Length: 110
Length: 110
DNA sequence: TTGACACATGACAGTATTATCATATGATAC
DNA sequence: GTATCATATGATAATACTGTCATGTGTCAA
Picture 1 (cartoon, helix red, strand yellow):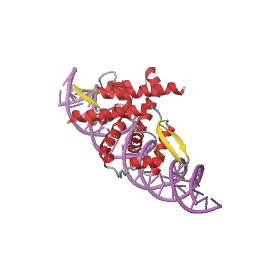
Picture 2 (cartoon, chains in turn yellow, brown, purple, red; picture 1 turned 45 degrees about the vertical axis):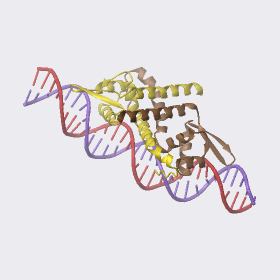
Picture 3 (spheres, each protein chain N blue to C red; picture 1 turned 135 degrees about the vertical axis):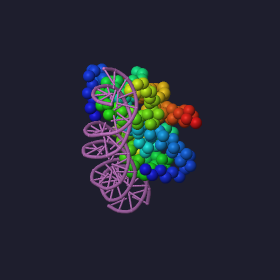
């Protein structure tokens, strides 16, 4: 993408814009979102997440890796299992907020 | 994607999951996000948005169309110009919230 | 130490998204 | 009418993303 700004102040926020885009991209996938929603109830291991979401182990592992690289989830090993949890309360809040937003929109469209 | 849930309650939320994914997809693009950030300062026409964002007219029109179809922005015609604005305060709040989140994360990572 | 278990990872085909070019539409000024 | 302005739209090539298959790694039990 070309970001040819004639204004320095816009340039300064480009790094933020980029970070924001990357952040939303993480949430813009049904599998990842499904995993994050599952983790709102507390930490769980891969098999547990597969059970909660109905997704395959490979897919869950892949997406957890993506989320982990971006520090959206944290992991903890216990024997041969790996437990994952939302990295911080923010993710929980942000997802919750969007859910509320959609719910409210639903009402308005009735 | 396979969503083979063995639990009816999960099935019920699939429509929400889908809506949530679609919503985040709208935000998960640098051009669209740039446009939305520009509109946080108030409504503007296409040329104005092009100026604010540094994006081409064609691209801005395309992305505004996407955002409009999903009711994220509303439009108002005035002569040969079209003014766009955030459809409701939610979008503003959600984007603002995520920005705060990222800002706070920055601080933590220092 | 062997086998099963829990998870991770590389490769890849299918699909979706992106930005651009070319062009169309509609409004206004002359 | 016609030239120009402001925006919209269709087609398309490049690129990115998704989910799956095959397989690898580390752990525990017997």
